[in-house]
Image (cartoon, rainbow, N blue to C red; front, side):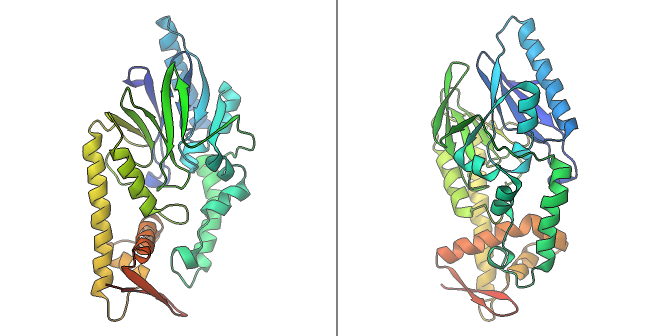
Length: 331
């Protein structure tokens, strides 16, 4: 049991295979009208692990003669490590599932989920040969994801809220607000009085968040981070992975500097290849000269999104040929 702030407990679900199934943070806001933030994994052993930790927190409260009543669970976004456990936790512990309309639409069924998250390799990754990539994606969604994450879809959420909402938790007003970037449906939960932000996957202490097609946006991510930077009285960030961030202003500044440096890196690479142009895959190889091709599926996405952003800013342009997509500088 880890009480990271008075009345807020962290339950960690252990991951597997490194970044493929990372260790997941689930937060219990304990009290007389509490809430669970994020749903974690849906494998039976993950649900059992959560239940045992949750029971320990409940016993801790009851031993102190404190009222312990938690009836709701709210995920930050519709990625498998954040919603897969919702259905089984509702069945086992009676939690009411609270979703935004945007999240609900994505996790309603496998068909809806795949529609949002299967990338179009021609448009999203600028590839002309796509047979392997399509097969790889289908493998992930049809076999790998259910087996690793224990995905269960939610046809019947108990409550639908707006992305910008006020939620009363233990007699205090918390606010949700949209924070797209990592995913288009991403929300954050904030208590201005306490200065506590549940950031989901947008802000993590020691690593940069994953960004990649088809549902991420570098532009939206930067805007979300800048919005969070201006939150009044921000004291602590509790993220979906890793440890609490107790110097949020510094960490936010590091993220914004990093994104700016990465964007400039890609622009410089395109400018250095102004004569003949450069493919996205070659940009990837310049940035990660020792990386194996499989790493492309982890790191290649942010490169594609950044190239699209530079296109929108009219700093680069592309030329499509039958065999490849080339990028050229405009300025």
